[in-house]
Length: 46
Image (cartoon, rainbow, N blue to C red):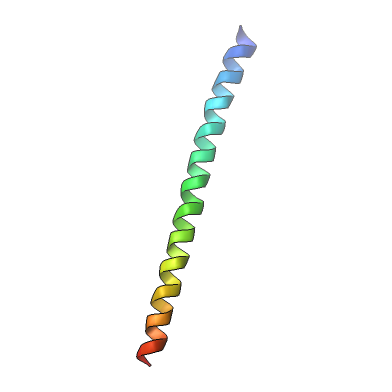
């Protein structure tokens, strides 16, 4: 019973960590894409 509860809790913690890591990676990817676009516009102006 106790082992099952611990496993369930750790599973939720793992899911939470995965979602947080996923969001960070996604945001970083979107940010780099925007940065590339902005950099190209900056180069075109000069």
